[in-house]
Image 1 (cartoon, rainbow, N blue to C red):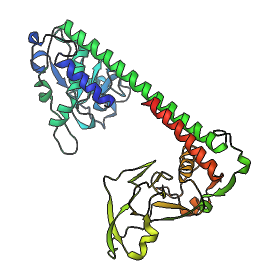
Image 2 (cartoon, one colour):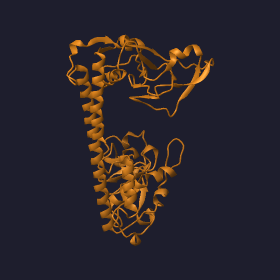
Image 3 (spheres, helix red, strand yellow):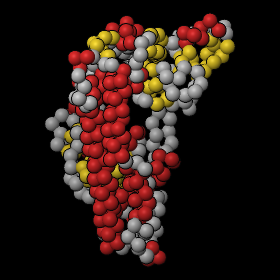
Length: 392
């Protein structure tokens, strides 16, 4: 479960009483507009420099919401702008919610007296609720607000929809307990997510070090003086697949692999496209079990070994490699992974980078004795398996 989904589940528990095991029979369920004053701001005329130059009054826009506390604004307006627009002062601890655009439903607590544009609704503070409780409640409602948002070019919710929202309202003491429980839970979720990220980064670094050791001989204590320095074109025959053309209707419709099916060490076969292949093209454009496939475009160099018992065709942004001499194909898969991680594979082209057949053919690689290739692969996979167990 993602961090965001976990937090949503925690918010749901907070406002149905289960997070703090509260007795909800004592709670009230008023509309926000029945317990608080709400208002929205305005935009001073943009062309009038007197309204903005040398301004010192904070003027918040909806895009600035989405943080817990707001202490300042990117743009300031003048007193004259305030007097000649519908912008107005909001007191400290007002809870702000975005009404328009991509940030619809995002909230923040105001920590310095400010104004805003009309895309922000302010809920003024009072003794019925704590700002943090209102903030977390509105945060829990964002999906609902997005669901009822209307509009063409940009989504929006009206101030009335905010005012008509039903809020579970326990005592102030219970609100404070709920806020404390939420913040403790959020801190724990963030700590776990950070630990997972750190562990993931460490695991990635370890894998890179293992591959470095594999190809300098130190992983297996190999005598690299017996290794041949060669190229991918010397070890493999290779070619790219068939280009898709709108007027291609000769032959038989067959499924084919694209770069969107090919990932590191795996294939995503959920969506497999088809195009026409003639019988005379099948030898050149068919993949069989054991072939190494490498992306020519997109995430260049991304590689996997076709390990299925059936054959399939492939298109022109994928290289198919088949050994022309005795070779452990997985050894060369790990070389591609190592070269990608260490930035040794760089595409050519404008806009979309490419990894051409000529570049692939001349890519320098080691060629240890076949027995040593097999020992290296076995050691890499033993250590990678141990890392996977730790990270899980």
